[in-house]
Picture 1 (cartoon, helix red, strand yellow):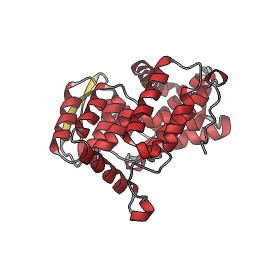
Picture 2 (picture 1 turned 30 degrees about the vertical axis):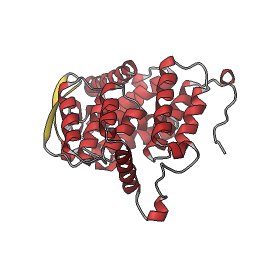
Picture 3 (picture 1 turned 90 degrees about the vertical axis):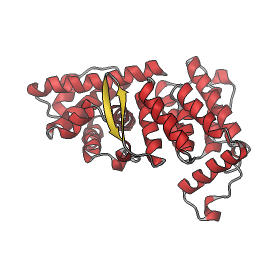
Length: 309
């Protein structure tokens, strides 16, 4: 049974927070390879009214790609003709590898098609999914194509990071120099984090501070702070801002936590209560300049992400 009701499009209106929730749900479904559920959600979203045209175009493009890539899931199956993981006693990664190789057997041009999607389309769930499929396809040509593209093209910082993760999963090694924002960063591919717990502890400690304050002052804020912080960290990985966060004093964590709280609170409520936020995190007058710098970095990321979509 479809878990998303499908009334007429003109009867459904999504508010911004609801849309954010569904977008996050969609990402989770794709990352956990629940493609059938993702298709159901996409069909539901396509029936909703009041969204920007680009959203409908992205949803339809992703739905078309999923239907073509996973026809069995589109018909209510669990995959693309691949046996259930429990039957084969395989993990999620093994299943993803089998799926990618089965696609390659069916279509020798499959890697090139994935590369074209990644390199020529805007950042979306579909491009991230294509990168994940590329992680499991052998051949040095993919490494060379992705590395050359990162070094020569102007690539969205989030897509850069996702591509670096793909290169690491593929076993690539060595340093790569690429443009990140307004600076050039050098990143060691083999040290790029693949999971949240692979980042240095300072990254999660910032969120822990926000969680403490949000629990008291604004419980819903933490959920959105997690999403923003995760994406922001991926976008600044290897940059001067990233190094400052890791190398700075203990107070740096409070500064970034306060700036993150301020950014999310403004986005949700439209209120700019900076003095109140600085008080929550013990940010004194002497720390204000650094606080404002962290806030500008977060705000710049949010603005650039909206413009690039």
